[in-house]
Image (cartoon, rainbow, N blue to C red; front, side, top):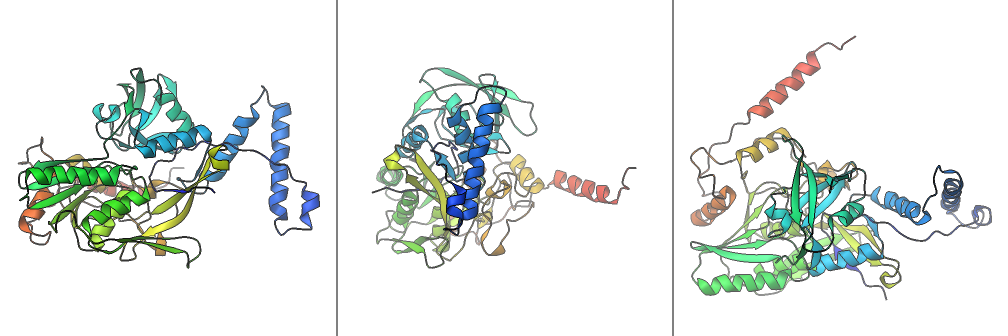
Length: 462
């Protein structure tokens, strides 16, 4: 029996492989309502045959079919793909929490490899790569137009070897970064004490996350049994396994719904509920989120917000509200199909697809980040993908605006401003009771707005 793995991470390693069956369209047309499908399969066979015989150089049939499957599935949405046997093995290694590489979650946008998030304590994070960076070349060879998997293959290799990435970053000239490959064994959950408060950092959701989170909290609680509150840091968390998002949410809830998923059929609803038992004993909680908080991380943030268990501080999350089912083919011998099969909904019934989860207190980490939010509505979010699954119920993501707060001139730039504001919320007891800071000024947003008005009024050149 096929085993299905539920995945809701943002990165999609689009691989592609499979077999092609040729069907006589004439024999099937009269006997099946899918006559046009069979006719198109015949067309595919004709195109493949002509290409094999007439292309200027010899072609590889397997690569052509891989590319066709890649195009078919990726046209559905950014997260559906075909995994060949090698890609399926890579995915399983990643979700087990141990694999070789640089520690990057990536996707593709308009034929360019885009960084979703560097993982904590990996070569990519230590090198200073940031969400939203574009990787244009690996070891001097362009990766423009390559599938994610082909690009990732160039980045992976033997631990200890050096790999050079060419990075394109907004407001910067392209630059090269040299990294040394490692066997990536990222701890998905770590914790530390900040005065009277605990900070539990969850960087991703793999098969070990719930156990690691519970152990990390237990360690800091043992050091300070009288801690007064907990900050759950989900910033730059690209997501991962659905069952681990449920497991982490369950650590802090005494019961009730965590998340539901709904497929094509309105009756196809699956609900996930918490069991009794809160590992914190009811400590006040704040959750930190930003535009890199995606999918599984959004499930946790949405559940704790809807259930009034925690208030959220930071920026609106990424907005990936879909669930992918990984379906092995012939037990994985022919790879697997990663297909978007459902949307997920928070306990209050919210679908956050494209729209994201808005924080209770909007706080930019830096002035530059505040400016980026003011200038671009969807600069780094699910809504930026042209073929993203539509938002549910006609909702749209909040447009460009000035965030409520950003670091003031007097703030120590070496400290984490969002974390400091989360501590303030715990100290004052709620977002409502926390004294607010003046809104930052977004000069560039005003200039761009005026420029657009001028452009509209300007006469059309002849």
